[in-house]
Length: 220
Ligand code: DX5
Ligand code: ZN
Image 1 (tube, rainbow, N blue to C red):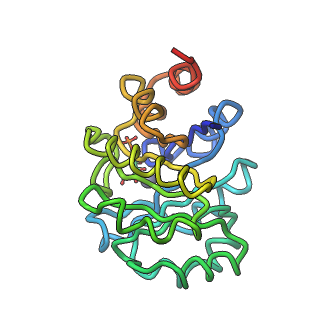
Image 2: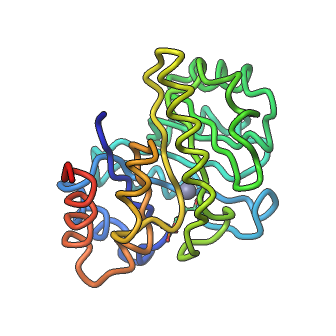
């Protein structure tokens, strides 16, 4: 199974965002961009102009996590700004089929995220329409929170389900991931790892990414 590291810019210094991204870019696979609306989640982060500016400084694939209502309304602008993949929340779109169609018609890859209280069984009927699913391992809205252990159980169930259906859906884990638990998340079935404070919150972000990678790529 391929493993991808997706640093979350939420933990970066927004005044030096381009530099922060370029420092880690050669060592990571995706850039995780958290968009919040202050309504679906109790916080506001960044929006389309920031995605647009970042597109000019990097070729990294943008994994845009849309923690917001009416995300589909913005798909054309999000795509035009330079996004590659969008994750919407199942709590906003309990049946995300038409949302997936809307994303794909814009040329976006499509993913659905579930919050800690939402069971994987609610997402399972829609696996076929997802390039990726996101298991939130914190309550969305803020970086730097502690990993919720129960999310490991969900990753296991999700991986089994994806394999039994013969699908290639990626499983991203988002929230509280660091060197101490990334391998457990991999062993539970996740293969895309978001890391905010454990990358941009560290003094040496490159070293931090390399440490995470050594944890998931070692076979022990
Ligand atoms: C939380 C965001 C996460 C966050 C992760 O609402 O969706 O992507 O940036 O940050 P850490 O890795 O610090 O938990
Ligand atoms: Zn996120």
